[in-house]
Length: 111
Length: 145
Image 1: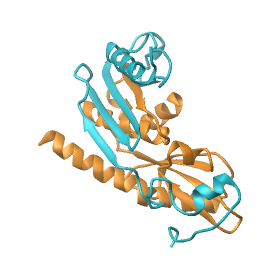
Image 2 (image 1 turned 60 degrees about the vertical axis):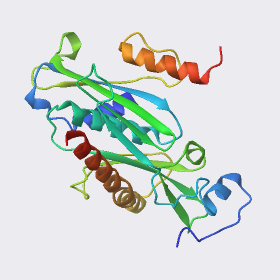
Image 3 (image 1 turned 90 degrees about the horizontal axis):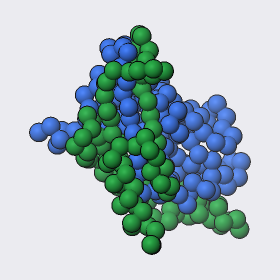
């Protein structure tokens, strides 16, 4: 059994791996998974997925007519934007994400 | 990161059905503790499922790290936290849950032999992707009941 295979090592990284995981999970175990659909009213589709302490909100807008460089005559263009976790919100983000970012900043950065 | 997710979603969305149109996917992390790529891909696919955009297949991601204690022995740690991610080689795989033999996307840092890639992919499919698929299916049923 991998879980019972305790090994002693002088390096910090292998100590982390060799005995037990810090949160007492099995090696092949996911963190508690939470999925919520429809968390953003203004989007065509949205979901919030959280694995333990990592949480992401994703939203989908479209399909809408593509213009300029996004237009492909034979297929849908998929544009993905990954907003930064710790910086100021980008100007291209929708108002919801400005609100989310503001909440994150309010929680984590003392003013 | 955005380009990688875009590549994955191009294999998921039925692109030919809506030519000359745009589907914009926005991903916003709200808390971070490791395995961000895995969570971001799964969130994007869930948002597409919720939107009703025509899809060729569903795909879910799982990630792990490999601890290198010595050449003969190593552990695979599924869904690593931020602390675990700093200590080992990482591996991300995206699978269609109904097709275990064909991965849609593989990405890793560190050295993996061909046999190890196969071993890790199987580990991620069985322990990660299938369980994510079960959870998302249950959440979808709840949403549309």
